[in-house]
Image 1 (tube, rainbow, N blue to C red):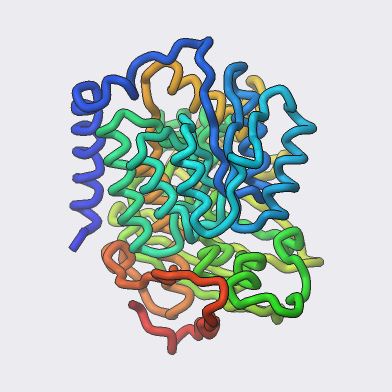
Image 2: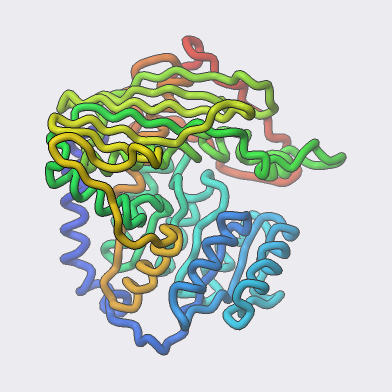
Length: 426
């Protein structure tokens, strides 16, 4: 069993051990890469986020080329490629021979000779794709969340440790950690600007993501195709919106608390607006910590309602507010507001990834991205079951949402939507 204490201890040990071993095991991966050398990039997952990530990768370094693409659907790959060719045509070297479609297309991109892979498919497949990329010695940009269940998180931790041993970079899609304003603000909070943190209140209140819903099911569409095209509505594919969207707030909570992980979570949730699939459209989760801190996150996706994505952090000497322009910054014994440069945090991620590869000084976000993902999963488990869920229960859960084998023509039943108080903790 992986306990909260052993997880935190072993994560630190693995990080140190990995750094010590990397130069001996993978001198090639950690060597500086000449600025004139072309770095070949492969895109796995050609939706909107994948297309955006590919464009940012191409802008991050003048000698980056997109050479291979993969998606389960040909139409999505075609649309993504057309968009990218309009953005940076001179840096696109994708041909029909390096355009791969199907459930095994990810492996074909990894095997195509690329140096870096962008993992931007639906979250269900992230652990499998990350494992394959690291096994093949590739640097990785890994979108959030990194899994939809505890089994996947455990796999990601193993892959992250392997990446450290090999000296490979693993950059996460938790973009707020690459926002210049948030970086400086969190650094001041960590330095004591608001004293000791006592409570955090976060919200992720938005409308529905209509761009993720293609409409009615087409005649003849198999169960698997229908669910993949509507992935956001199925927990096994998306993790639900707490794990897929509000996880940014979860990650900021973890960051602000210096990666202290909660001991347990208590949550409620449900669906107010009828929809197919089995996801919720609202959650409210309280995370409790051994230090006595409490962090509360509420999230919902309802059209026509008041929207707000915010973080309020109360300390013994002041408050940090994020999300409302009028109150943004630090107030209390110290009053401060960020006035530095502004840059696109999504672009900063890729700039720093490729700079790390060039310098031979790999960046590895593996442990932090796994922690934040498990925190979100833990909250979903608490809301789905109506029970208190501990960190150790979430980490060691036997729940494995992703089917071991997928076939386009085999029926794929939809698990009934969770009923708090009746759905069991696995």
